[in-house]
Image (cartoon, rainbow, N blue to C red; front, top):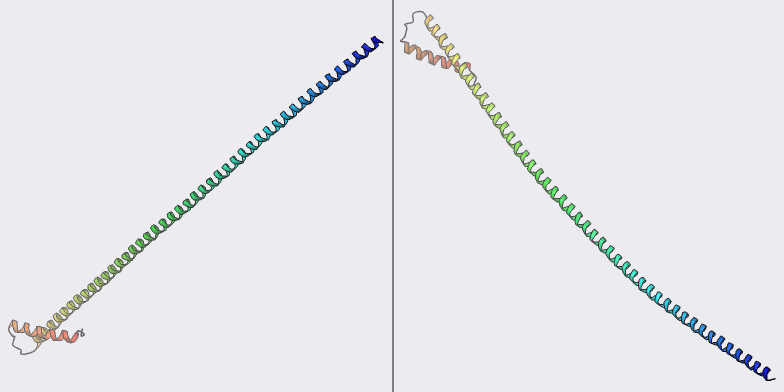
Length: 191
């Protein structure tokens, strides 16, 4: 009986020890799992924090990139506007130069035409003057010829008159000249 009692006590002790060991092991496992779970949660929190910071940095970088793009587009528009203004100014300067050249050309052409017209007028006046001079010279030579012919004809008539006493040479010349002038005046038309 005593042996059975001791054995039962030993069995109960072993069972109690085993139960305590199991309980301790269970507590340790729970504590380990709790620690691991807490560590995992902490790692998730840290990861989320890192992801949040990364997201913020990416958002900030994207915002900076948009601002830089907007600045580049603004600068490009300014340069394009400046280029257009310069092109318009260059075209206006070219047009002004062309218009000035056209005015100079037109002024030179008008001066040339005036000079040509004046030259033509001078040539026309010179031609008229020369023609008048030639006409006057021809008329004068014709008149002198007619006077000479009238003088010779009168001289021949006077010489052919019967019983006429020859007059001195200078009287005949005066008479002949007066008669020749009268004959030429009658023969030549009035101016």
